[in-house]
Amino acid sequence: MNYNWDWGIFLAAEPGGTGTYLKYLVVGLGWTLATALAAWVIALLLGSVIGTLRTTPYKWVVRLGNGYVEIFRNVPLIVQMFLWFFVMPELLPAALGDRIKQMPPPWGSYIPAVLCLGLFTSIRVAEQVKAGIQALSRGQGMAGTALGLTLAQTYRFVLLPMAFRIILPPLTSEFMNVIKNSSIALTIGLLELTGRARAMQEFSFKVFEAFAAATVIYLLTNLLVVYGMRALEKKVRVPGLISASPTAGGH
Amino acid sequence: MFAGYDFDVIQRSWVYLFRDGMTFTLTLTALAMLGGIFFGTLLAMMRLSSFRILSMVAGGYVNLMRSLPLVLVIFWFFFLVPYIYGWIAGNGRPIPIGAFYSALITFTMFEAAYYCEIMRAGIQSIARGQVWAGYALGLNYWQTMGRIVLPQAFRNMLPVLLTQTIVLFQDTSLVYVISATDFLGAAAKVANRDYRLVEMYTFVAVVYFVISFGLSSLVKNLQARIAIIR
Figure 1 (cartoon, rainbow over the protein chains, first blue to last red):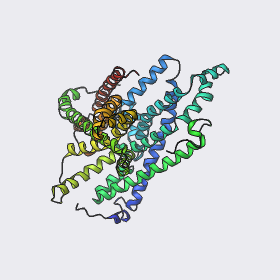
Figure 2 (figure 1 turned 90 degrees about the vertical axis):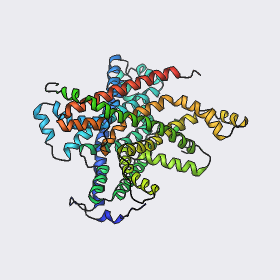
Figure 3 (figure 1 turned 135 degrees about the horizontal axis):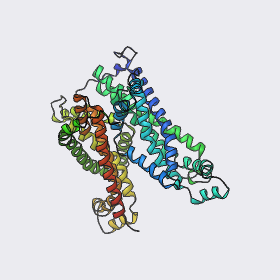
Figure 4 (figure 1 turned 90 degrees about the horizontal axis):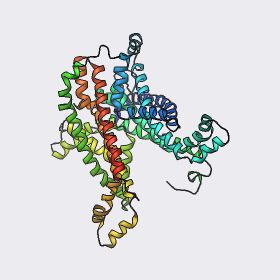
């Protein structure tokens, strides 16, 4: 293939005047993580509440939770992004909508992106939380009732602490999904890692260097998340479960 | 909330949206599904192979695809495929292949990694004794796979494969980033031309919702119908 590789490009200055291309991409990673983490906080809080509500004995609450999940699951993320960015400010009262539209960059795209990703991911967290609670034996909830705990206390002190530890591994992959999905925010103008790799390609015509760098940065980020979460899993594991015994499983 | 809503723009453009946009989306989804399942099954067989090199190559490929954002992969293939095509064609220069084929190759290769994991689970759900039975009857690897293991694996995994296809159907809207005219791309063009962003994007969301919700209800029904009672 006739392609002139030029890895020195990363030390060249980017046209925006903020420094080298390398720095430009690393700042992009910063925005990726800032978007993903903020969205993750929303997703965890909202997802835990909705996932929990979907296991309660109140039928209409369960139905409401299911409806919420179906709405966010059946619309593509990029369309949801556009709804938050283009449509939401128009549907709000005019004064508030104008204020949102006039937010200086990058906040004008950052805030809709975080809300969009947060709500989108909350349904996936909700699914996991629900699965985690349903994986517990019925006796645990009954024991809570027998001890005189209210339903809320049973969830708070008995069911949820167990459920969260069980679902830690699937939550890790959901967190990595938020990091990956945050790249879709480039369509509403947020210059995160993928957006910056794309911009670098347009400025410098160095297509493959730019995307190779972004690829490597994503892979390293994934590795870090996996190791971090493994350490966390080890710390909070439940004594007595298969996952906790030191001899079990090599993988 | 719907005051000042211009429904007329949808009426004016729906023929274009569905004839051009939705046709692109559905063709891309269907072809990428077939290609993705085909390559995904091959990848799964490689991953489960006893030849270390094969399983390492397949494992590396699947893990690489699954750690990268789809948008980045779309960009990669959009620029890389013309180079590879030019190289294969032997004239050394990149040859443009157009957004549709670029998207088709991207989604086939990307989804293959996800279909691979589903098929791997499907193959692993078959009792080992069946493979031994196949070999004992004198069948070779391909006959055992093709006539005993894969048909059952497909049947067990059919609902999951279809659910992944619904995800694929939604993901194809990301071809927006290479300016292809899929359903969303067509709507975006009308939206920007007539400055009717609110109407068009809400309409797009509703259409995607109806189709995806309908398909997932069908999959749920199917799942109940084909469940094997053990």
